[in-house]
Amino acid sequence: MPNIETAFVKNYEGEVHTAYQRLGSKLRNTVRSKKQIEGASTVFQKMGKGAASTKARHAQVPVMNVDHSTVEVFLKDYYAGEWLDALDEIKVGSDERQAVINSGAYALGRKTDELIIDALGVSSNYAGDNVSGLTKAKVLTAFEMLGAVDVPDDGERYAVVGWGQWSDLLDIEEFANADYVGSEDLPWNGTQAKRWLGTLWMPHSGLVKTAGVRFCHWYHKSAIGHASGKDVTTDITWHGDRASFFISNMMSQGAGIIDAEGVVTLRCAE
Image 1 (spheres, rainbow, N blue to C red):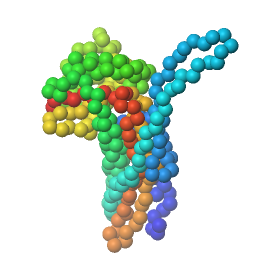
Image 2: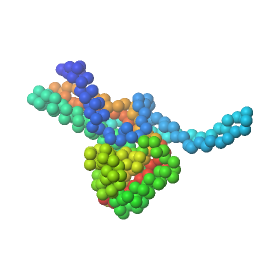
Image 3: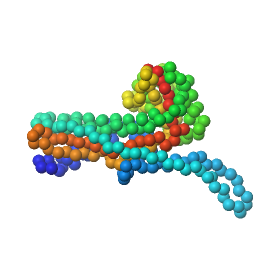
Image 4: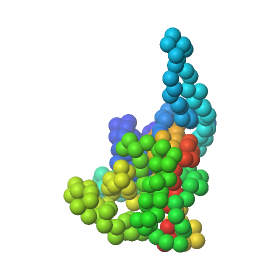
C-alpha cells in the first residue's frame, strides 16, 4: 500500500480490535462462543439430561443414554467503512483517528449484539403478560420457569433488559435496597450491570420493541451460541483522488439458539 507506513496500519488495526473488545459487544461474553471457524457454518452440540442408577455387584455400569443433538449456526460477513482525510489526520492527530476507531468498533459491536438478540428472540417461553412493565411478579415467574427446567444456578445466568425496564427494576426494593443485595451490588454504583437472584442483569438499548412491547431475556450462557469465522480486522487504503484513507472494518459472525429451555423472555409494555 503506497504512502502508508506499515506501522501505522498495524497500530490502527490493533486499536480497532482493542476498541471493539472494550466498547463493542456487551453480550458476546454472556453466551457460548467459538472462534476461528472455517467454512460458512459451525455446529454446536446440545446434550440432554442424564439419569444415574444403581447396578448389581460385578454388573456393567449403566449407561445414561443422554440425548445428543446439534444446532448449526451460519456465518455472515459484515463491514463498517469510513473515510479519514489526510489533512484532518495531520491537524488533529490521534483524536480524529480514535474517533473513527471507536465509531467502527461500536458499529461492529452493535451488530454482534444484534445477532445474539435475534437468537434470543427465537424463544417463546414467555413469563407473565405483555401489558405491564417489568414487575417483581413477572421476574419471579421467570425465575420459577428457569428453575422448573433445571437451568443451572452456576453464576452463568444473564438477564438483558431495556432501559425502561431497568428503571422498573430500580423501583423494586429487593433489587435496589442494600438490605437485600448488599452495598457492593447496588445498581446505583453503576448502571452497566448488577447481580441479583444469581443472575447478572444489564440494560441494553438494542432489544427488540414491537407494538409498544419490549422483549427482554433471561438466559443461561449455554443456551445461545455465537460463532466467529473472523474477528474484527481492518484494511486501510490510500485514495489520492480524495486525499484520504479509506478504512474498512470487517468481521464474519453468526449466532443461534441452542437450548430454547434455557431462555425465558419477559415481554414488557413500554
